[in-house]
Image (cartoon, rainbow, N blue to C red; front, side, top):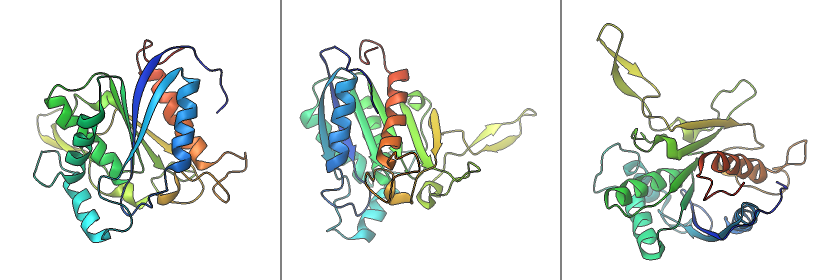
Length: 241
């Protein structure tokens, strides 16, 4: 992840969103890495960690039920994680570019929070990075702002069981005006498979044995790809050359 540090005074708010049964200290090293990548991009970053469904001291069954409520295409009273994240952003956000990085269920909460805040017209430039998240249908208005990372095998097949949950599918009119099911009708605008060491819980691991033969850790590879997408997709006034 070596690069020259860009010179700019852009301030960016970055929120790291945990999934189900995550330990309170899980994002410690990730925060350091995100801050380093931000400096290299020329940002003054404000990095915060949120637990939309609580940490690993809370009932796993309760958390799983709440994540299910955030997988819907429609707003419901069960959108617990999304509403929680939206409120935390309201309390701290000042209109600067906003990046939400959600692991597992945190990716679903990130999207729902953006939907809520967008309807309130409280957002400037924003991006969502979903890492190993269950599939939540993404409305076309938001697709280009969402980057989705998932584990694949050497043949490119989804191998993270959590990423098989939910659906991006929807009905479309076929060539002969007959209904046809499209598995990716509501998919994020940018979907990428990564080959990493380990499984669902390990996208952001940084030490052995979660280091590949090139001596690159899972976290370096995952966040490195995410930052490349941010560099390519964010306006140049936000993302320095």
